[in-house]
Length: 216
Image (cartoon, rainbow, N blue to C red; front, side):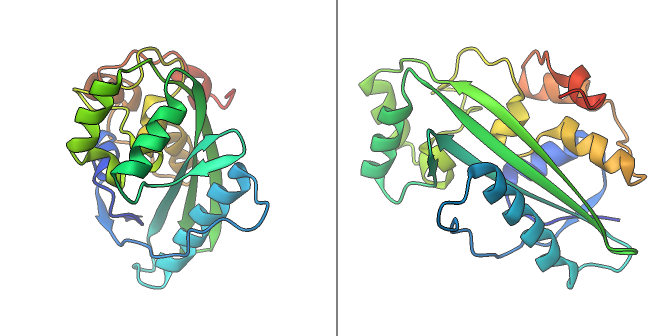
């Protein structure tokens, strides 16, 4: 039995692409970074904390899947904006430049306590969207529950024109990384994940073969 330790609609959408049957038990943890904590260690710590937090509320035969995503620019982790001014500041900062998105996965098998972690990093080159486009997007309200104040999949704003890494990672759940982790724990997907993911996200992914074979 799979348990997704998240209430994110985007993660639910992506999980469904693999054909897995799963239930939801959202995890509530303190998401503040530790002093001087690098982004990689930060997302890995939170993903593992989320998995362990949910373990006590999940069925004892469950595989608990937890994830944490961070938008990183330089040494700074960009969270969700509190208001329109913060959203504008973040979007201006990211415009026309590249930043990184990190997602850590932690899968905890409750029957024996085995925990497997994985990490995906995607370089995200933002396009030179105009002030008017940015203002319309902020007015839509979409940035306020998004780290970095944007959704890569937003059909009108489309902040990224060319991406060579994992699109699903930027949405919050790198599906091929999850696939290879669940295979190690004996729960492969019911569907062809790369095909389903590319069709749903309308994105031609060039990295999935290396991810599935462990080269990336």
